[in-house]
Image (cartoon, rainbow, N blue to C red; front, side, top):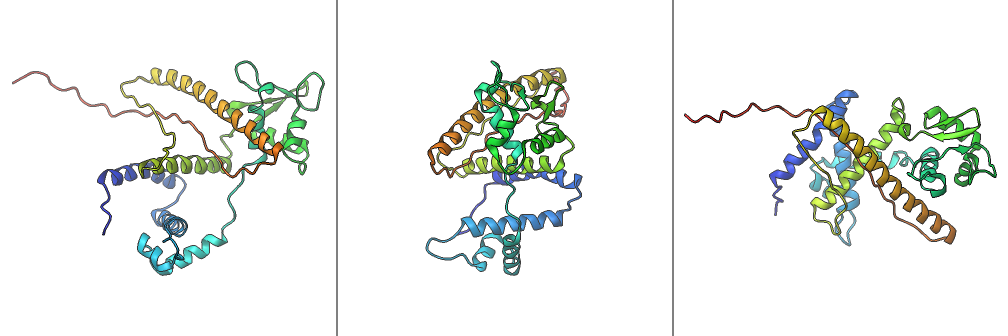
Length: 280
């Protein structure tokens, strides 16, 4: 029996695709290239998640589920196997998470304290100690140089390393920004798709939405949202770091990952003409 797709779902998907279309046009990706990406996504998901219990998935069934030609199904599956493995979280990102998730390295407001470059009896830790906690393969000096190069830390004349929380993803690092864009948007859509399909338990997916604000209002609210978001992110990060350290110490297998994020967006609303209240 054919599935009757609610028009509301089609409308929602069309709305979601508009910023994707804008992004593609900006980076010179035309609709044929995007269509090829979409076909590959359809085929991969059908192969992995829509199998009939007790039966192996076939190219013909994938073609039936997705509308992609059977010859393209086989080609896309072969290409998927040849792709490089997903990028892992970088050492820089892990170091930042560890720094922000260690209470003794934060001030009373939860902001990161500066650390001495090398171990010192006057401080609970050092940049070198953090780096050595994460890896023995890369020298702490090399990791420090990379952090400085990315603009996420500053080394002062007194040999103190300062974490620059406002610049964790440099504006000119397109590869880093694209990586986090993919991770963030994928996770948010996956959570929303789970909820829309009636998944239980539902994932957290909440937002506030308002019109009728001035540009000055938006600036004030944006600052408040940024402060509240950073507080929530630090709290969740702190808890995750503590659990990971506990599992590492106990040798407990840990198979799950989490994504928790925040965003703020504003735009100019279309101005509607006032209604004429006079009666004729």
